Amino acid sequence: MADHEGESESVMESVMEKITAKLHGHDSPSSSDSEDGKKSLVEAVKSKSFRLFGREKPLHKVLGGGKPADVFLWRNKKISASVLGCATAIWVLFEMLEYQLLPLLCHILMLSLASLFLWSNASIVIKKSPPNIPVVGVPEKAVMEITSALLYAINRGLTSLHNIASGRHLKQFLAVTAGLWVLSAVGRWCNFITLFYLLFVLLHTVPVIYEKYEDEVDSSAEKVKTEIKKQYRLLCEKVLKGRPGDVLKVRKLS
Figure 1 (cartoon, one colour):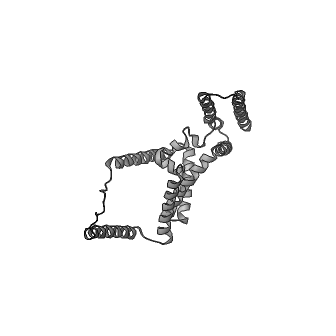
Figure 2: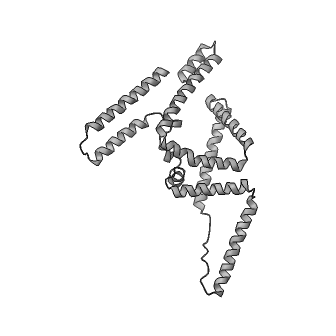
């Protein structure tokens, strides 16, 4: 396994050396088309290397693209910082100050209605234009899109759980069991609000850090994956000792 890993690394190094030689071989000023061709060639070589979780798309598209991905990847630092700050303020309000959700909503509504009511009546006395209160409504299209996305995610999760419960995919069974155990352990240490806040903070920190150090993280993840496969094969060989046919199957899969 180590020889195979060394061979793959040597192949990647030789390919990158050839690309570098080509780039240095044309030091004269080139057109924008040639520059784009060089960049696309380098990106094509990188795309064939190992990527975390076997992804083939850029991280921005993996996160859904659009404004949510821009927020998670800090494309606009002011918006991302504002969202994270609001989430922190809400967590402090509910967790540290032990404020309850229903009283908070009622107080906000009372304060808003009282302010608008007094402003509307005061504008008649002081002969100024009343406040322009917009008509707020929930768009049906957005609700249908969110509902459809949630249904798709839930049905996909239920299908995966059904396949695992049917005795298939040993690796997925072990991964889901370990994940549920970790989640239950974390649930003992903190409540739902704190857990939700921690996940929110992770979404705003881990993707941007991964994007910055993508090559280093993927290289380390490839080594870890190789070692896990090696240990998994050894474990299966010990468990299936005395059954040569099953041992051969495990070696082929790993």
